[in-house]
Image (cartoon, rainbow, N blue to C red; front, side, top):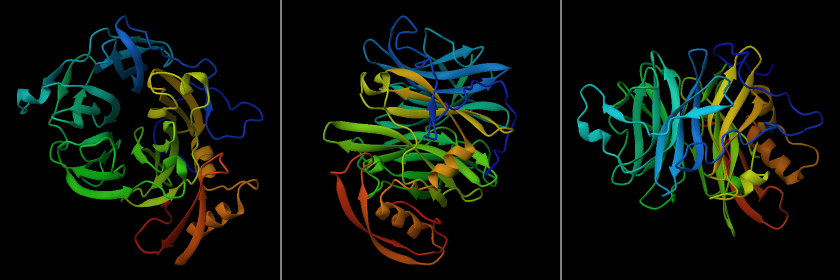
Length: 383
Protein backbone atom coordinates (compact mmCIF):
# COMPACT_ATOMS: atom_id res chain seq x y z
CA UNK A 1 0.00 0.00 0.00
CA UNK A 2 1.08 3.57 -0.64
CA UNK A 3 0.04 4.71 2.84
CA UNK A 4 -1.16 2.99 5.97
CA UNK A 5 -4.04 4.14 8.15
CA UNK A 6 -3.03 4.57 11.79
CA UNK A 7 -5.85 3.15 13.86
CA UNK A 8 -7.89 0.09 14.67
CA UNK A 9 -8.84 -2.88 12.56
CA UNK A 10 -12.50 -2.75 11.59
CA UNK A 11 -13.14 -5.65 9.19
CA UNK A 12 -16.91 -5.76 9.69
CA UNK A 13 -17.69 -2.19 8.69
CA UNK A 14 -20.03 -1.67 5.71
CA UNK A 15 -18.15 -2.32 2.48
CA UNK A 16 -18.56 -3.13 -1.21
CA UNK A 17 -15.68 -3.87 -3.54
CA UNK A 18 -14.94 -1.55 -6.42
CA UNK A 19 -17.00 -2.47 -9.50
CA UNK A 20 -15.02 -4.15 -12.25
CA UNK A 21 -13.87 -1.66 -14.86
CA UNK A 22 -14.73 1.35 -12.68
CA UNK A 23 -11.96 3.96 -13.05
CA UNK A 24 -12.91 6.54 -10.42
CA UNK A 25 -11.47 6.61 -6.89
CA UNK A 26 -14.79 6.60 -4.97
CA UNK A 27 -17.77 4.38 -5.72
CA UNK A 28 -21.36 4.35 -4.44
CA UNK A 29 -23.22 1.78 -2.40
CA UNK A 30 -25.53 -0.22 -4.67
CA UNK A 31 -28.61 0.49 -2.57
CA UNK A 32 -28.25 4.21 -1.97
CA UNK A 33 -29.69 6.23 -0.41
CA UNK A 34 -29.32 4.38 2.87
CA UNK A 35 -31.46 6.88 4.82
CA UNK A 36 -34.58 8.29 3.13
CA UNK A 37 -35.85 11.77 3.79
CA UNK A 38 -38.84 10.59 5.86
CA UNK A 39 -37.34 7.94 8.17
CA UNK A 40 -38.87 9.69 11.19
CA UNK A 41 -42.48 10.92 11.12
CA UNK A 42 -41.79 14.67 11.17
CA UNK A 43 -38.76 14.82 8.88
CA UNK A 44 -38.60 16.57 5.54
CA UNK A 45 -34.98 15.52 5.01
CA UNK A 46 -32.14 13.62 6.74
CA UNK A 47 -28.63 14.38 5.50
CA UNK A 48 -25.15 15.74 6.37
CA UNK A 49 -24.86 13.41 9.36
CA UNK A 50 -22.13 11.73 11.41
CA UNK A 51 -21.59 8.04 12.20
CA UNK A 52 -19.12 6.26 14.53
CA UNK A 53 -18.55 2.70 15.78
CA UNK A 54 -20.18 2.25 19.18
CA UNK A 55 -20.20 -0.80 21.48
CA UNK A 56 -19.76 -3.26 18.64
CA UNK A 57 -22.45 -1.57 16.59
CA UNK A 58 -22.95 2.00 15.36
CA UNK A 59 -24.26 5.29 16.65
CA UNK A 60 -24.69 8.62 14.97
CA UNK A 61 -25.89 12.19 15.16
CA UNK A 62 -28.17 13.13 12.29
CA UNK A 63 -29.33 16.36 10.77
CA UNK A 64 -33.10 16.13 10.41
CA UNK A 65 -34.97 19.12 9.03
CA UNK A 66 -38.65 18.88 9.91
CA UNK A 67 -41.57 19.81 7.70
CA UNK A 68 -41.36 23.35 8.96
CA UNK A 69 -37.76 23.27 7.65
CA UNK A 70 -36.44 23.84 11.17
CA UNK A 71 -32.94 22.36 11.48
CA UNK A 72 -31.97 20.13 14.41
CA UNK A 73 -29.81 17.14 15.33
CA UNK A 74 -30.98 13.70 16.48
CA UNK A 75 -29.26 10.59 17.86
CA UNK A 76 -29.57 7.28 16.05
CA UNK A 77 -28.39 3.67 16.25
CA UNK A 78 -27.71 0.81 13.85
CA UNK A 79 -26.60 -2.81 14.01
CA UNK A 80 -24.89 -2.75 10.61
CA UNK A 81 -24.18 0.91 9.78
CA UNK A 82 -26.72 0.82 6.96
CA UNK A 83 -30.18 0.36 8.48
CA UNK A 84 -30.85 3.05 11.07
CA UNK A 85 -33.25 3.81 13.89
CA UNK A 86 -33.24 7.54 14.57
CA UNK A 87 -34.84 8.99 17.68
CA UNK A 88 -38.00 10.95 16.97
CA UNK A 89 -37.04 13.76 19.34
CA UNK A 90 -33.97 15.98 18.93
CA UNK A 91 -30.98 15.83 21.26
CA UNK A 92 -31.40 17.76 24.51
CA UNK A 93 -28.09 19.03 25.88
CA UNK A 94 -27.31 19.63 29.52
CA UNK A 95 -24.73 22.33 30.27
CA UNK A 96 -21.37 20.67 30.85
CA UNK A 97 -19.90 21.06 34.36
CA UNK A 98 -18.77 24.64 34.82
CA UNK A 99 -20.79 25.94 31.87
CA UNK A 100 -23.59 28.47 32.20
CA UNK A 101 -27.03 27.12 31.20
CA UNK A 102 -27.20 29.81 28.52
CA UNK A 103 -24.85 27.72 26.35
CA UNK A 104 -27.77 25.40 25.57
CA UNK A 105 -29.79 28.23 24.03
CA UNK A 106 -30.93 26.95 20.65
CA UNK A 107 -31.80 28.75 17.42
CA UNK A 108 -30.87 26.01 14.98
CA UNK A 109 -28.42 23.10 14.78
CA UNK A 110 -27.16 21.40 11.65
CA UNK A 111 -24.37 19.47 9.87
CA UNK A 112 -22.99 17.55 12.90
CA UNK A 113 -19.69 15.70 13.13
CA UNK A 114 -18.78 13.13 15.79
CA UNK A 115 -15.23 12.30 16.89
CA UNK A 116 -14.05 9.94 19.64
CA UNK A 117 -11.18 11.46 21.64
CA UNK A 118 -9.69 9.78 24.72
CA UNK A 119 -12.77 8.73 26.70
CA UNK A 120 -15.81 10.31 25.06
CA UNK A 121 -17.56 11.18 21.83
CA UNK A 122 -17.37 14.85 20.94
CA UNK A 123 -20.04 16.39 18.75
CA UNK A 124 -19.54 19.57 16.75
CA UNK A 125 -22.23 21.24 14.69
CA UNK A 126 -23.23 24.54 13.15
CA UNK A 127 -24.95 26.21 16.08
CA UNK A 128 -27.27 29.19 15.89
CA UNK A 129 -25.98 31.76 18.39
CA UNK A 130 -26.76 35.23 17.03
CA UNK A 131 -25.54 33.80 13.75
CA UNK A 132 -23.88 30.50 12.86
CA UNK A 133 -20.94 29.34 14.97
CA UNK A 134 -19.46 25.99 16.05
CA UNK A 135 -21.33 24.25 18.87
CA UNK A 136 -19.34 21.71 20.89
CA UNK A 137 -20.65 18.96 23.15
CA UNK A 138 -19.94 15.42 24.21
CA UNK A 139 -21.56 12.16 25.24
CA UNK A 140 -20.47 8.84 26.64
CA UNK A 141 -23.51 6.80 25.63
CA UNK A 142 -25.50 8.77 23.00
CA UNK A 143 -28.29 9.10 25.54
CA UNK A 144 -27.09 11.94 27.78
CA UNK A 145 -25.40 14.88 26.07
CA UNK A 146 -23.40 17.75 27.55
CA UNK A 147 -22.83 21.08 25.83
CA UNK A 148 -19.61 23.08 26.15
CA UNK A 149 -19.01 26.70 25.22
CA UNK A 150 -19.32 27.66 21.56
CA UNK A 151 -15.87 27.40 20.00
CA UNK A 152 -15.93 30.75 18.20
CA UNK A 153 -17.86 33.94 17.71
CA UNK A 154 -20.23 33.98 14.76
CA UNK A 155 -19.77 33.49 11.85
CA UNK A 156 -18.29 30.03 11.37
CA UNK A 157 -19.27 26.62 10.02
CA UNK A 158 -17.88 23.13 9.45
CA UNK A 159 -16.12 22.56 12.78
CA UNK A 160 -14.22 19.27 12.49
CA UNK A 161 -12.09 17.88 15.32
CA UNK A 162 -8.91 15.85 14.92
CA UNK A 163 -9.19 12.40 16.57
CA UNK A 164 -6.26 13.02 18.92
CA UNK A 165 -4.39 15.95 20.40
CA UNK A 166 -1.73 17.71 18.37
CA UNK A 167 1.04 18.14 20.89
CA UNK A 168 -0.82 18.90 24.11
CA UNK A 169 -3.86 20.53 22.53
CA UNK A 170 -7.15 19.57 20.96
CA UNK A 171 -7.30 20.62 17.31
CA UNK A 172 -10.11 21.69 15.01
CA UNK A 173 -10.62 22.70 11.39
CA UNK A 174 -13.33 25.23 10.54
CA UNK A 175 -14.45 27.72 7.93
CA UNK A 176 -15.02 31.27 9.19
CA UNK A 177 -16.90 33.79 7.07
CA UNK A 178 -18.45 37.22 7.32
CA UNK A 179 -22.15 37.84 7.91
CA UNK A 180 -22.98 36.66 4.42
CA UNK A 181 -23.23 33.04 3.29
CA UNK A 182 -19.60 32.42 2.34
CA UNK A 183 -17.60 35.33 1.03
CA UNK A 184 -14.44 33.99 2.70
CA UNK A 185 -14.77 30.27 2.04
CA UNK A 186 -11.32 29.20 3.35
CA UNK A 187 -10.29 26.49 5.84
CA UNK A 188 -8.50 27.38 9.09
CA UNK A 189 -6.91 25.35 11.89
CA UNK A 190 -7.22 26.12 15.63
CA UNK A 191 -6.05 24.59 18.92
CA UNK A 192 -7.41 24.47 22.47
CA UNK A 193 -5.95 23.18 25.75
CA UNK A 194 -9.38 22.40 27.20
CA UNK A 195 -11.99 22.33 24.39
CA UNK A 196 -13.18 25.76 25.59
CA UNK A 197 -10.60 28.40 24.70
CA UNK A 198 -9.56 28.24 21.04
CA UNK A 199 -6.57 30.01 19.53
CA UNK A 200 -3.32 29.50 17.59
CA UNK A 201 -5.36 30.01 14.44
CA UNK A 202 -3.60 29.02 11.22
CA UNK A 203 -4.61 29.28 7.58
CA UNK A 204 -4.78 25.87 5.87
CA UNK A 205 -5.98 26.56 2.33
CA UNK A 206 -8.61 28.40 0.38
CA UNK A 207 -10.53 28.31 -2.85
CA UNK A 208 -8.93 27.71 -6.23
CA UNK A 209 -8.70 30.10 -9.16
CA UNK A 210 -7.81 27.17 -11.40
CA UNK A 211 -9.84 24.14 -10.37
CA UNK A 212 -13.37 25.41 -10.93
CA UNK A 213 -15.07 22.74 -8.84
CA UNK A 214 -13.60 24.38 -5.69
CA UNK A 215 -13.57 28.00 -6.81
CA UNK A 216 -16.42 29.35 -4.65
CA UNK A 217 -15.69 27.85 -1.22
CA UNK A 218 -14.13 24.86 0.50
CA UNK A 219 -14.84 23.30 3.88
CA UNK A 220 -13.58 20.38 5.98
CA UNK A 221 -15.63 17.19 5.81
CA UNK A 222 -15.24 14.11 8.04
CA UNK A 223 -12.76 13.71 10.89
CA UNK A 224 -9.25 13.71 9.36
CA UNK A 225 -7.80 10.21 8.94
CA UNK A 226 -4.35 9.62 10.42
CA UNK A 227 -1.93 7.84 8.07
CA UNK A 228 1.81 7.28 8.06
CA UNK A 229 2.00 9.91 5.29
CA UNK A 230 0.07 12.59 7.18
CA UNK A 231 -3.53 13.53 7.91
CA UNK A 232 -5.81 12.56 5.03
CA UNK A 233 -8.54 15.17 4.81
CA UNK A 234 -11.66 14.72 2.72
CA UNK A 235 -13.23 18.11 2.12
CA UNK A 236 -16.00 19.66 0.07
CA UNK A 237 -15.46 22.13 -2.72
CA UNK A 238 -18.11 24.27 -4.37
CA UNK A 239 -18.57 25.63 -7.87
CA UNK A 240 -20.84 28.65 -8.25
CA UNK A 241 -22.35 27.84 -11.63
CA UNK A 242 -24.89 29.82 -13.63
CA UNK A 243 -27.54 27.46 -12.19
CA UNK A 244 -26.39 27.51 -8.56
CA UNK A 245 -23.88 25.77 -6.30
CA UNK A 246 -22.42 22.30 -7.04
CA UNK A 247 -20.81 20.41 -4.12
CA UNK A 248 -18.12 17.77 -4.66
CA UNK A 249 -15.44 15.94 -2.61
CA UNK A 250 -11.73 16.66 -2.74
CA UNK A 251 -8.74 15.32 -0.82
CA UNK A 252 -5.69 16.88 0.79
CA UNK A 253 -2.82 15.52 2.84
CA UNK A 254 -1.83 17.58 5.90
CA UNK A 255 1.41 17.43 7.86
CA UNK A 256 1.12 15.06 10.80
CA UNK A 257 2.64 17.44 13.38
CA UNK A 258 1.66 20.79 11.86
CA UNK A 259 -1.70 20.11 10.20
CA UNK A 260 -1.97 23.64 8.82
CA UNK A 261 0.82 22.70 6.38
CA UNK A 262 -0.58 21.10 3.22
CA UNK A 263 1.69 18.37 1.83
CA UNK A 264 -0.54 17.49 -1.11
CA UNK A 265 -3.88 18.62 -2.50
CA UNK A 266 -5.73 17.13 -5.43
CA UNK A 267 -6.39 19.22 -8.51
CA UNK A 268 -9.41 17.10 -9.47
CA UNK A 269 -12.45 16.23 -7.39
CA UNK A 270 -12.82 12.58 -6.36
CA UNK A 271 -16.63 12.38 -6.11
CA UNK A 272 -19.56 14.51 -7.17
CA UNK A 273 -23.30 14.48 -7.88
CA UNK A 274 -24.24 12.08 -10.67
CA UNK A 275 -27.20 10.00 -9.51
CA UNK A 276 -30.80 11.25 -9.42
CA UNK A 277 -30.89 11.45 -5.60
CA UNK A 278 -27.79 13.70 -5.71
CA UNK A 279 -28.94 15.83 -8.63
CA UNK A 280 -32.50 16.48 -7.44
CA UNK A 281 -33.86 17.34 -4.01
CA UNK A 282 -34.27 20.34 -1.75
CA UNK A 283 -30.85 21.62 -2.87
CA UNK A 284 -29.85 20.01 -6.20
CA UNK A 285 -26.31 18.96 -7.15
CA UNK A 286 -24.91 18.33 -3.67
CA UNK A 287 -22.66 15.58 -2.31
CA UNK A 288 -21.49 16.63 1.17
CA UNK A 289 -19.17 14.29 3.16
CA UNK A 290 -19.55 14.27 6.96
CA UNK A 291 -18.25 10.95 8.32
CA UNK A 292 -16.01 7.99 7.57
CA UNK A 293 -15.37 4.52 8.93
CA UNK A 294 -11.86 3.12 8.42
CA UNK A 295 -10.12 -0.25 8.59
CA UNK A 296 -6.40 0.09 9.29
CA UNK A 297 -5.54 -3.42 8.08
CA UNK A 298 -6.93 -2.98 4.56
CA UNK A 299 -6.92 0.79 4.12
CA UNK A 300 -10.64 0.73 3.41
CA UNK A 301 -12.70 3.89 3.92
CA UNK A 302 -16.51 4.05 4.03
CA UNK A 303 -17.93 7.55 3.56
CA UNK A 304 -21.31 8.86 4.71
CA UNK A 305 -22.52 11.88 2.78
CA UNK A 306 -25.54 14.09 2.34
CA UNK A 307 -27.17 14.04 -1.09
CA UNK A 308 -29.06 17.05 -2.46
CA UNK A 309 -29.68 18.23 1.13
CA UNK A 310 -32.40 15.58 1.26
CA UNK A 311 -31.13 12.02 1.90
CA UNK A 312 -28.02 10.19 3.14
CA UNK A 313 -25.76 8.13 0.90
CA UNK A 314 -22.80 5.83 1.40
CA UNK A 315 -19.67 5.50 -0.73
CA UNK A 316 -16.42 3.54 -0.60
CA UNK A 317 -12.75 4.08 -1.31
CA UNK A 318 -9.31 3.25 0.08
CA UNK A 319 -6.45 5.37 1.31
CA UNK A 320 -4.43 4.28 -1.73
CA UNK A 321 -7.22 5.17 -4.15
CA UNK A 322 -7.46 8.69 -2.75
CA UNK A 323 -3.75 9.42 -2.50
CA UNK A 324 -2.85 7.90 -5.86
CA UNK A 325 -5.67 9.76 -7.60
CA UNK A 326 -4.70 13.05 -5.98
CA UNK A 327 -1.21 12.77 -7.48
CA UNK A 328 -2.12 11.22 -10.85
CA UNK A 329 -2.81 12.90 -14.17
CA UNK A 330 -4.25 10.52 -16.73
CA UNK A 331 -2.98 10.54 -20.30
CA UNK A 332 -6.34 11.80 -21.55
CA UNK A 333 -6.11 15.01 -19.52
CA UNK A 334 -5.03 18.37 -20.85
CA UNK A 335 -1.30 18.79 -21.41
CA UNK A 336 -1.56 22.18 -19.76
CA UNK A 337 -3.16 20.62 -16.70
CA UNK A 338 -0.36 18.06 -16.67
CA UNK A 339 2.23 20.84 -16.78
CA UNK A 340 0.38 22.67 -14.02
CA UNK A 341 0.49 19.64 -11.77
CA UNK A 342 4.13 18.83 -12.44
CA UNK A 343 5.08 22.45 -11.73
CA UNK A 344 3.61 22.17 -8.27
CA UNK A 345 5.34 18.83 -7.69
CA UNK A 346 8.78 20.26 -8.36
CA UNK A 347 11.35 20.56 -5.60
CA UNK A 348 12.61 23.98 -6.75
CA UNK A 349 10.96 27.40 -6.90
CA UNK A 350 8.72 27.77 -9.93
CA UNK A 351 6.97 30.62 -11.66
CA UNK A 352 4.59 29.63 -14.42
CA UNK A 353 1.56 30.70 -16.36
CA UNK A 354 -1.09 28.02 -16.54
CA UNK A 355 -4.51 27.42 -18.00
CA UNK A 356 -7.30 26.25 -15.73
CA UNK A 357 -10.61 24.66 -16.61
CA UNK A 358 -13.72 23.38 -14.97
CA UNK A 359 -13.95 19.60 -14.94
CA UNK A 360 -15.89 18.13 -17.87
CA UNK A 361 -16.11 21.50 -19.56
CA UNK A 362 -14.33 22.93 -22.58
CA UNK A 363 -15.99 26.33 -22.57
CA UNK A 364 -15.04 27.60 -19.12
CA UNK A 365 -11.40 28.65 -19.40
CA UNK A 366 -9.48 30.90 -17.10
CA UNK A 367 -5.89 31.99 -16.98
CA UNK A 368 -3.91 32.54 -13.82
CA UNK A 369 -0.42 33.28 -12.77
CA UNK A 370 0.92 30.81 -10.25
CA UNK A 371 3.94 31.32 -8.03
CA UNK A 372 5.34 28.77 -5.67
CA UNK A 373 8.33 29.15 -3.38
CA UNK A 374 9.72 26.25 -1.45
CA UNK A 375 9.87 27.08 2.24
CA UNK A 376 7.76 25.91 5.17
CA UNK A 377 4.76 26.22 2.90
CA UNK A 378 2.94 23.22 1.40
CA UNK A 379 4.84 21.03 -1.06
CA UNK A 380 2.20 22.29 -3.45
CA UNK A 381 -1.20 23.87 -3.30
CA UNK A 382 -3.88 24.74 -5.79
CA UNK A 383 -4.64 28.43 -5.95
